[in-house]
Figure 1 (cartoon, rainbow, N blue to C red):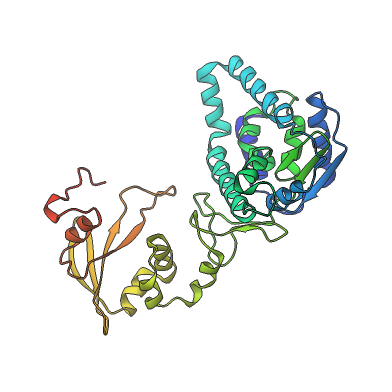
Figure 2 (figure 1 turned 180 degrees about the vertical axis):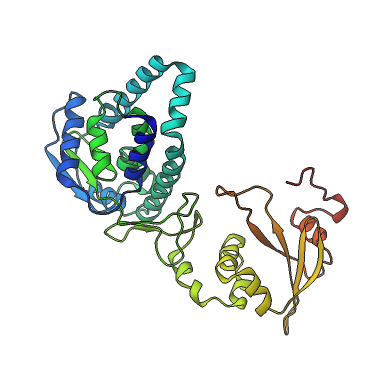
Length: 339
């Protein structure tokens, strides 16, 4: 299989949603054990999400030791070494860039988010597994299935010793190999990304599993589910009251900057090379002063994000406001490069 075809194939696997093909995935699990020189697991159990899998594993006293090293880590490392030796350092680097590199960036971030959410949901003392540290140890035993797509794209067509791992990844989600049992997860039922590949949805979970375990995100930023649920009912007063700058930015993006300024009675006070100073007069309260700035560093999709910085009411110029956010006087604020 050529590089482009392999990348497309595994990109589709990484993004796949819907019910697992349990028979095909279980066959892949058993093949992975046999290829590693291990007896097949006595049982293959299913869970509806990584969170459910960790909960299930808490109660499996007879699972035996983890065999991830034999099933995944060792053959993975040996196959990478073999391919690296065959292609040479420059050839391997070019091969990786053409196959797995882009998938790696997307899936690593997603896997980290899933681990963090499982640890937060399951990692309290008294829920088994020894608290957060115990949950993290169980998560280290996981094989990432479809989220291992980057490496599987790089190895695609270069031998059969990873065929079992590839079969599980193509038909299921994360899985845990132990001596006596393997626990396999269903795939997500929903996955929503923006044009840059970041988790993104404003009216529900960006990633959701059959049992309700879910991640909520806006343009890649994790947000609480209740926060998203309240976006349709936003008011300027609620936006102004939000103390978290990142959440306030999400509110403004959803509500619309122009609309916010219009309905808030904002007036344009000053503009210079650092940004635009706006002021909103409030009854029975001090003015709200905000500086509109455009981030010089582009987003992954090439656009430049607009930020609104809350500054002291006495601020009179945009430069003064931006300098204040850095703890500087206006005359001391002089960025070396503007891009």
